[in-house]
Amino acid sequence: MIFFLAIGEILLAQQILPEIERAKVIDEILADRFNNLLPQLMDETDIDMWILISREYNEDPVLRTMLPARWLNARRRTILVFYRDKAKNTIDKLAVARYNVGDNILSVWDKEKEPEQWKRLIQLIEERNPKKIGLNFSKDHNIADGLEKTDHEEFMQNLPKKYHKKVISAEQLAVGWIETRTAREMIIYNQLVDITHDIIAEAFSEKVVTPGITTTTEVEWWMRQKVTNLGLETWFHPTVDVQRTSEEIVGHLYSFSDRPEDMVILPGDLLHCDFGITYLRLNTDCQELAYILKPREREAPEFLRDALKKGNKVQDFLTDNMIAGRTGNEILAKALQDGREAGLRPAIYTHPLGSYGHSAGTTIGMWDAQGGVMKADGENYPLRPNTVYAIELNTTVTIPEWKRDIRIMLEEAGFYGEDGFRYVNGRQTELLLIPRIKEHLGE
Image (cartoon, rainbow, N blue to C red):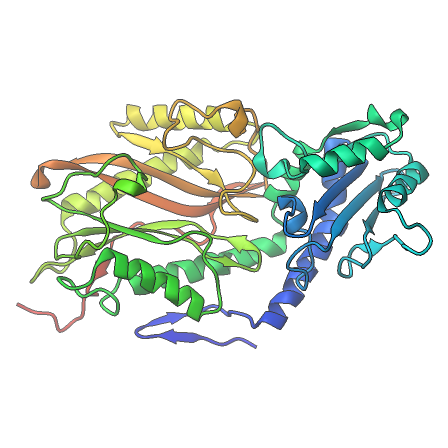
């Protein structure tokens, strides 16, 4: 059943599923990931047993992505065991828990037969005698560091000494699980980004913005409320800001504590937003720009249109340098060099996007680390196919007409696949206009 949600003059042309249908899709995607993606990742990382341990309300961020749609949290202490037998081409998906974890992971703990949960886990290990036992601890990737201290200590205390030397970090496996997108997820991702673009288009329209009256803070809360009304969620609070001829750039990029609130939006303003949604366990992150037309104007000034083109060029320099096997620091350095040689003043701070908004994978700069990120931020992690990124960056442009510099800040979801890079649902190449131009607009 396909339906359309009318939003004033703008049509949200994507299906937003009711909760029961969302649950069905989520569980189908999980089954595909467990049965097809996970064996591949375990083979690539040479880990034949992966153990994830979490307690209720203190979940490992990787385990959280594995819970079925009806599980909003782990239950009591939940232990998941994945065992890969490459020779037989099988994968065991087991739960040392009182319940099946959905349809994909079967409970193998009968408390009446074996009262001790840790002992039952050790029995499974001994029965399979793995070559390596991967646990989620990591210095370099926060999302892969979800095994908390108490559970790690108790696991090692109960694990027979002969297996201790087999325990390794599952960092690469955990990051691979979080960052890799399946073919079906990418079909859905296009719809998520389309919804995101539609909400921004409505927010940056005369339906929401009345120049001289509406404030930036009011637009932020309108966006937040729109997401709630649609039955979706945001993973961060939206931000809206303006640049204009009489104002200087405030503070450092993304220094939110210095960003003015409740600024009244005026004709001639360059309006910017940072906005993302969460839907079907995927996240978007988008920054777009709009111009507030002055009386008798029918388009944005040429100097602003040219500035946007410079922002698009920085995007091109970045995405042209996204080559499999390169680290984020290598991509960053080459893209910045290319941009500067072209006479631009770029800054690049692109991050993985997917199961989390700031997800695990290849980090390409940070706003305060234009010389490259440190090891603890994934310095050496290479770009891999079938991954999604928030192509987030800016370029500083001198505007003589305004007697100041402005920043063209852009962000779009991009997919890096076997055939290279593409935008998930296009990118902004023209400024949005408020109000929209109508044919009857005359002298």
